[in-house]
Length: 248
Image 1 (tube, rainbow, N blue to C red):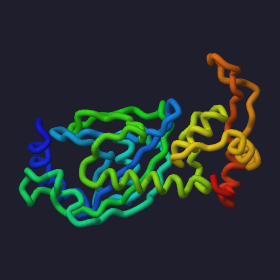
Image 2: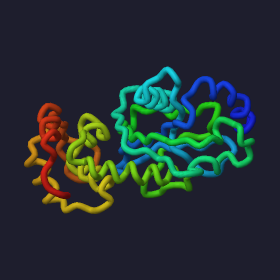
Image 3: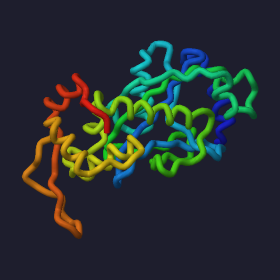
């Protein structure tokens, strides 16, 4: 069924079920093949892409709604989730529903609460629902055209990641349990949007004493196999409370 008919059919029920004028949009990040990715959705009958989102039930906490929306789209609840901004400009979402009657639920004015989520790439299932035709990871270095104000939401989420890199467990939630130092550096470079000096990065990250060097290495490369590390979660969380000092 085309999207227009689905939304018209569900509009009356949505007015009864959800809090009016309030929505949620999620920027879900993962790290894969040395690149930071964001989860994108293509809605039926739409050429542009969007971020996963939804509405808040009348008998539901806002954070619980965000967890539900994430589970519906990724198949898991075990994802780090952080509320980061509220988006409420006039006509921020109505343009996506220009062909609909003004009375339809989705064409009302919505203030959206932005969340960013951090997920290990391999743990996420890409779920296509009745409203969408595709769900894909997109590298932040090769982003598609976004619907409504979703590019603004994504840009703000990325800015928040950079600002919170020194006091939130971002690396722990984006990397696999075991990782190499080059992978950790690539993650920081992807978030910060700039190259980092290898020697300076290694010295600084080791000085924080938040890593455990494992007695194993990454196999299969053409060069010397790099050592594997994991986060010492107790030390990591303790360091984050104080904030990792200095700039990158």
